Image (cartoon, rainbow, N blue to C red; front, side, top):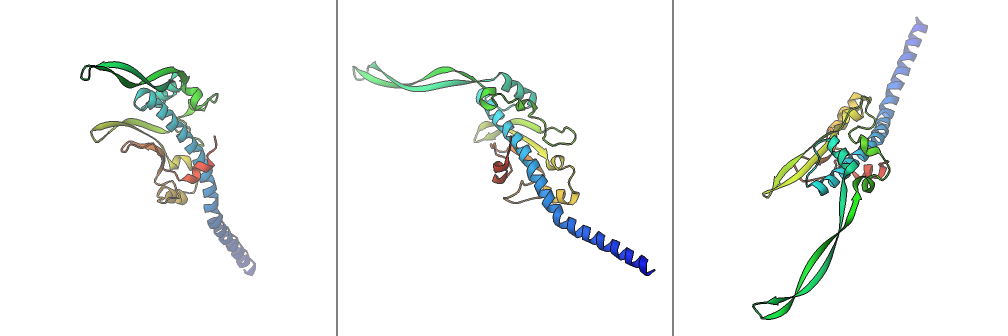
Length: 216
């Protein structure tokens, strides 16, 4: 009996040691995984933002779906213009003399490919909708529309993914805490997003630490 009790105690000690070790290292490992995966997701969201801003520059609104956005990147072009000042003499009936008139002239110099401007020879834009590290090929959700501000309808868009999709294999208790995060040093809320359907904004909800760690 003494031997059995000793074995049980040893097993209990080992189990307790494991739980203590895991309670310390678990959050550390979770943070490492989180930062690595969030960095990849944010890199993709930045590509979406830049592509949407190019789309708006040319079309006056944002793309409502990824197929439209990718087609635009493939075929879209920026118009390059140059503004210059000019002047000429014009007869002024009120004064009865020729007077100098000034004007601005906008010259069209040519066009440049949106794809070359944003991505050069990189074809990563063709998978803009795919969430990096997602286990089952999940996609970003993206919507576009308009909000009224001071009588003006401003175009808006939002692209996002739930944190649970990105951290699918992490401990549930740590994931729940992460989804409820509210801090200037954290990605706040249950999702990672860029843009807004309620406000005129193309900002993301991540802190600057992820801007430094983003890798393409």
